[in-house]
Image 1 (cartoon, helix red, strand yellow):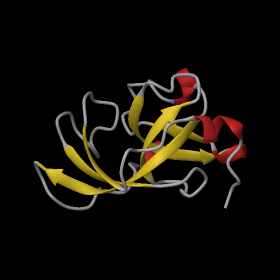
Image 2 (cartoon, rainbow, N blue to C red):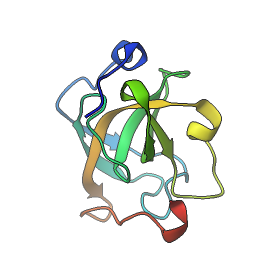
Image 3 (cartoon, rainbow, N blue to C red):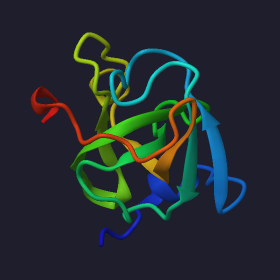
Length: 123
């Protein structure tokens, strides 16, 4: 476990233990697609693993809530996140470290079930 640093503690957590997130955009395609609805469970900073699909806030853009995959664990409870779509780079490569505020448990709509593992070239 990583102890949350000041940046992680300063970002707003999810409003409840469980939320439904609506995806907009292609950054996580093919794993998650535009208009998918995801079931997300709130997590504390530092309680995610590499490869988890998470709901995250960038330290540099705390107003922006994104669905991405944890690429690397960093110090202070922050993570490097990336989308599964290699053509879209609106992730930590553009915005820097993020704080995972929720872990995606599964897809609710339109294809209910668990999410696929990362594509082979996403690592």
